[in-house]
Image 1 (cartoon, rainbow, N blue to C red):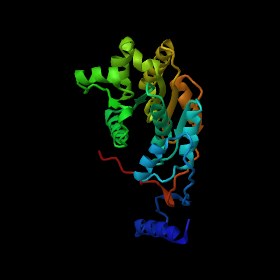
Image 2 (cartoon, helix red, strand yellow):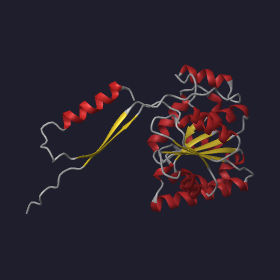
Image 3 (tube, rainbow, N blue to C red):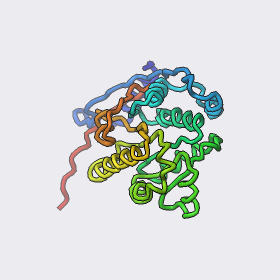
Length: 272
């Protein structure tokens, strides 16, 4: 951390504590976290040049090291969970192997699961903006009109949905989704740290049903999970999916210096 960053954090704390009587400071601990430089890597040679050029035009000149590490693991057939910081580009970890596979194999399919429809719609919009029409990415949730649902079942290759819709609208009618399940190569589980408690148990059973049905149709998809930073991401992924997962936790994205202060607010007298 530079001297300027240190001085800025110290000045901010001094300003906040101005006027606090001596001995009454609520500040209990201060940690100064230095800036982290970017660690980039080359694009994997299995990523189509067309996709690389598209990503470069969108500002991704070179991927971060953790993005390549996770993508390479998924490409090799390993189940992966990437648990790096906010805004570290976790989406590219699954986008690279999924898009490369869908571009190389015209019949291949993939499934994306998110805990909310809003997140799924946002990720779908990002894929659509790449302009790769043959991917045929499509949303499938409770708001999808019946005509569009029929089209997704018949033609969709990367389906964006949520656990509830998978439970109610896909797995019980798996016979109508046989085309999709036969060629299922990847299952992406985004924001997987949100699946806790009773709902987490439900999703864990749901993913086991999904794996069983995929095997029934001759497929064995690779699971790629994205999570916030947690203490043991590999264990979380294993409990959720029922398969051993490799954890990617070394964050290669840049980060500015930070000053973290632990603050203990005063006790308030109870008003009777």
